[in-house]
Image (cartoon, helix red, strand yellow):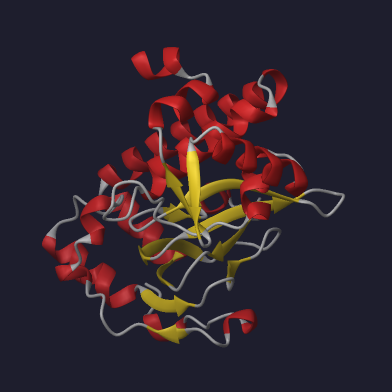
Length: 254
């Protein structure tokens, strides 16, 4: 098995620092992850073999095009996964939160990462070495079942994204993007303010449109009293109007 000391933090993560707080045996985040049904001995082994690092906001966790050496799981914080098109434009393909795993498709397929991962805020990320992870997955079938469900969910989201890009007007896609962010990160204590700070460019990169278009649409939503801005944060004033703007009523009934 790969020992914790054999893991070397990549050069681009020099400013990262090892976390001292997350012991798998007492970790609440683990119960919201693919490792939720481990046996006591497996939890102890995971704790011994994982390596945890704190990433600052905007710091890259792994790069598109590199080969995986293990699995990443978010202990705390928020992460965006994005791809660069041939024209250099960024497209956000996934938003991740505490308990989510990253890089599993590339790891299972022994393929290069199809996207890069970047911290949206200070985040603690646990790294599980490849050899240990596969050994653990062989011993505990529930991990593989969880991964299959994740892969199926990824495929469903990808199909939905393709349909949206082909058929939905950009205003509906922006409204749906806001709902997607709310579903992922929830609200702050006021139950109105979205619990993540995203730039206008990042919202545009979720929707698949120009930043100028995203700014105009958000301004329209503000004029329609659907949202308002609290400095860099977005507050939802009328969820019903936002849902109507996204045109997903039928989807929500099922």
